[in-house]
Amino acid sequence: MNTYKYILLFMGIALMGCSDLEESPIALLDPDGYFQTTEDLQAGIDGSLTHAINEEIWGRKLSIALMLRSDMVNLQSSQTRRVEMNTHTITGDNEMVYDPWKRIYLGISAANTVIQGANGVNEEESVLNPIVAQAYFARAFYYFHLVRLFGDVPYFDEPISDISAKSVSCTPEAEVYANIISDLEFAEEWLPNTVSTRAKPSKAAAKSYLALVYLTMAGTSDATYFQMAYDKAKEVITNKGTYDIDLDPDFQTLFNANLIDASKEPIFALDYNNVEAPNNAYDQTAPMTGIRGDDDDQGWSVAVPTMAVYDSFDPDDYRTRVSFQTEATIGGTTVDYTNFTISGHGDAANQPYIAKYTRYPGPYARGNKRATSHNYSMIRYAEVLLIAAEAGVEIGAADAVDFLNEVRERARNGGNSTNGGYVEETVPASSVPADLTSITVDDVLEERRIELAFEGKRWYDIKRRQLGDVVFSASGYEGDKPDWNASEDYDTPIPQDEIDRNPNLTN
Image (cartoon, rainbow, N blue to C red):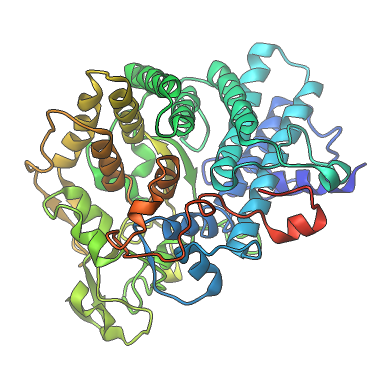
């Protein structure tokens, strides 16, 4: 038996911790003979997706890296690995590069093992394929992150072996995208219309990701891919009743771990549970974005928006209230953001903080609001509407403005939220933001910036639209980033340890 292959399979299945995924503790596995039933396959798929909630991906390192690389979040600490992300001076020795890279490939390997293992399960295609389609979706999900981060990357479509890994070269970006599309098309064909939890992929999830992949591949000018993105997003929108998806009436619910399970808006989500080290399958985004000295969360003041970011939001837009924390109780005294530094912590800052993850972390939150119960939407219905709007503008679709206005209409609803003082209030409906009568691409990108703020989307938008020279200039929300170099910094360097072991790897 190949030892490396055995270890990857074990890690892929044994680290399960998603609260709504099946948990099947498994001891010793034979990758060539373990999969006998569809239940075995489901356990392997759940294991593959569990890698995404590890601290090395969405628990902190990748999610925070995406925030810092954008123009929406500044760094309030001095750790070199984070400074590199914030200033775009990233080296191949950075653990915020290597750890997500390693963890993503573990997730891919687990998915590949399920796909291969399905060959030994004696079931009808109609029973087997909807299960295996989840593994195809998981593989596409992971590679989509990799290709957007790194460009050319090694592509494996079977369980990784130590022999093949020693000499593998990077697969061209275009080929990786072609494989992602192929996987999502299989998932689109076989996944069910509805699922018991949004932590499991559905047909809507496959279609929504296809729309986002096409939008990403379109870049700034490819009309063919814009048309494909529009068409695929429209399929989701037209069939939202069939897929049981829609905008949630209250924007705050999307970031309320106590209520999110009942929301129709998440299409595919990473669902956290009460899981602690050594597996590190738990959430640290809340403390990373929380206020130093706050009596409630005792955050770490690491990833914090600048005042210019806060000022760029309309104060009368309900999403501003949901997205930012402007009050805190420090030492028993309730203060607004102009006095957050009264705690005396050096990393604290007198400016609004991110509120999306600290406000309603759910029953599993413990000290510093670690290990929350959040469901992190990897894609939600509002984004599908905005994909249709952006692609629609590019192809001249008359209904593009309607999709954008549907997102703005929800924001006008108001809802139940708090402004930071831990007293929930009902925020009444308002006239802000008003509907637009016509839109440009810039209007849609701005709507994405507001609607999807701090959700790991902005850096990918900057890259696909080649906005770096503008947003990282002196006029940007974080001021001039002098080390920004558009010829190099859109792609993340491949980890140096990987190159040292295999000089064939280079991007």
